[in-house]
Picture (spheres, rainbow, N blue to C red):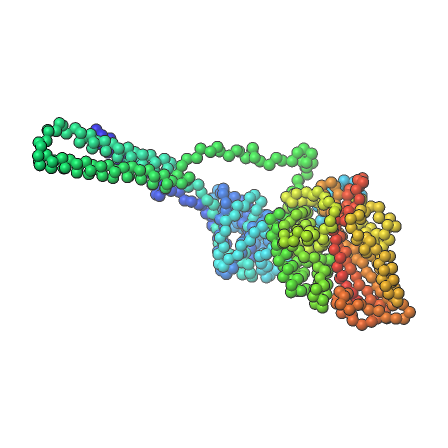
Length: 624
């Protein structure tokens, strides 16, 4: 009977192990599902829409193939649409009925000039939405294809030769742009793939169960053999003498052989279950973890009654100008660009990443260092980290979301003694890069005000907004007046200048007296006026504002009694002007003060605080 049961156990074990192996081989489902979109006609750009990326759950493996260089990037859908809308392009969407990707050719769009919203400076409430200037008229689509590679709009980008394959985890609201990275047409084939759950939860139990039955069969077989040997019947007494000794030796040899047989049988009893268990991964076993909560339990709550738009009014979605990872990538790029450009003094390349006062200051610095290599005035832009990041809240509408502004504070990771650098960056249009508009070194002492998280951003405030102690457009005029008149200025009580000697150092009267006392043969006149750079104001959490502005300060040195004067040797003014002679008319130099202020809201007792500043010599010449 034991032999019959052993045979049954062996057969059952073979069936179970066979089924377990079959589940991982012939019955195994595919590990992923993929959909392909073929671009029949050449296109400059291909955009994979969010519904195509979300056609199946899981991470998306993107693959694009074409002739030559292949470029692929992903970003927020509104940003991708804004970049491609002025050119003919192809969109890739998902058709749920056919479970296939479908393509559609979209012609280029142009914008009519929009009316700029009136700047009402009498509003009593702080601005609730960005008040950016209207988007300028977009130019007609260019005949030459512009490469999207390197755009600041992308969250990440990839380039390859003839093919690019990458895996991303794109959440809702993300699109992918595919291009050639050159003037060639975009790749003609795009594949999107998702992983499938091809786990076989019963393969492990089948393999282990079959192994266990195999062991049971071996045990039954062993017991049957032992029982068979014991049931041969009584043995006669062996006679004494040589014959009996020979029989005893024969029985001893049989016992040793039986022991070896038992050990041979025990080996598979131990090895088979061990091999079955070690070959099984998590995909071989059923999961008893609790199912994830429903979407209703984890969904983001909607707006409260006070936040909901009025009935009949469409809710306007707003987004921060950039995301934090996006800004970190942008600042790494700008930092590397600045280091290379500063070393080479490449003035022609500066316009790639600088504009306004920051551009003018750095260009002048390069000219000065051409004659005086050790005389540098330009602030370094450290690679990070970002201690403050305040992007402008901007519309999600790709037609009205520009220009965009971001204020950030960078700290030096190499030298803790270096003061943090505050930068204001602007992007004028989707296909433009972010340009540094202001660079300022933070002053020690004043506490930086609380600002909104980078994931939310802050509204930009109109220059004439009256809800602050001073309208943003008046801050530079007021500070220039303080530099001219000192404590006698009508604006002096509005500012807190303790902790910084900027007003004393640059005081016009004190400066004139100092220079004329050292050289009575000249007359020094000093003027400070508001600069013509754009004023940038971003709201803070307490209804105040961070205001970046410019003051331009000019000094004219004229000789007395028909004498002459000029720039001293080995000075930045002489190096910048190139004027090495003595002049009867006199000489003049102009310095720009890039300033960052905190301006509190109306009705508070707080003063306006100077948070950061930088001074740059931007021009020098003979008086005309």
